[in-house]
Length: 234
Image (tube, rainbow, N blue to C red; front, side, top):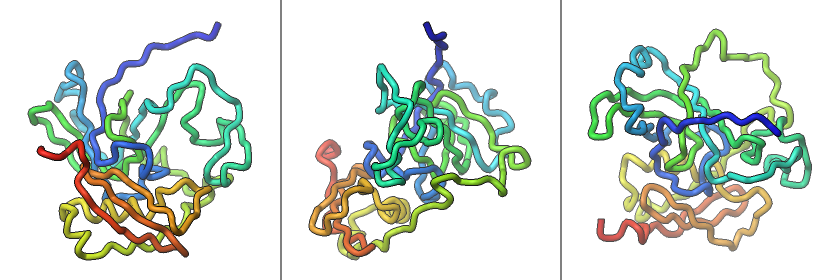
């Protein structure tokens, strides 16, 4: 029987993306996408963050809480390869792993020690769903963590981005402070890689809004912005 190890949730990420659809496929792709790390009550200790403000980036170790499974597969089909090629799970960043643990490098925007929620970390560029459990936080140390000569295997570089057409009358419905982040998320092409129907209307939940859009010939056109039903009346 495999040995098990108990892990504790120390914090949760609070951001604008409540669903997996639309979350950037890797950390750092949308630097305008900001979020907060809010600690669980027993870890709301200012001294645990002493010295953290001296670092520009952090490693987040977290749980793929929306991909929990009782079993695992030694091979997966990376979306990067169109979902048609199987690779070993340890050669991918698939969430369907023996232990559903994620690792992300994010930019530290600021450390806020005294809030109604206790100490809060403001970060940018996270590729996590709102509410994601955080298991640990470590500082990014450039001299040890940066490897410019590293090879990227089947993913040597980021995918190209889409041109985003956001009609002014619809963009005006988005709070000004969230416009760059939303546009950045859309430019990353939230669609599943195997879908390429120019007539299909896709929906993205972002910051209490529902965004509808179409994609054709490398251009994403926003066609509707409305307040999420769950937010009505707030």
